[in-house]
Image (cartoon, rainbow, N blue to C red; front, side, top):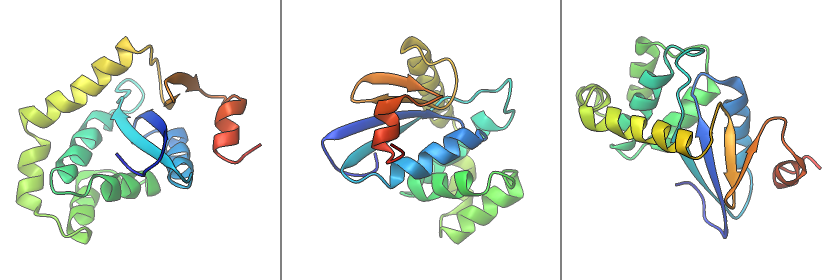
Length: 151
């Protein structure tokens, strides 16, 4: 979870989705908002999305989930393993542990649980945002635009 505050945003995302990247950085700028990112890898459109979600969870096991997510969303043109390893190095993470963790059953199950939870909650694609329990998708309606300071 990122941020503090009374309002809660649960954000279903795919690290290869450019609209998710835009929403990710916009949500990070909203004061007094707690943000939870849940994985919703759309494998049919984004073949690396599941592996990237596992990589983010592996980074999270070393305390760097949000920094790693920021780096993935910030440079979606470089998402293959050599660039992942460079991110791990820049963040000062243990590469051997990262590799073990990102391939582990526990991490895969965590990502699958987010995906399953999203499907149960009515998520059909990314980005999907639950703001204070209400589900929103693009194009963003007025309540989301106000939150993001776009209206």
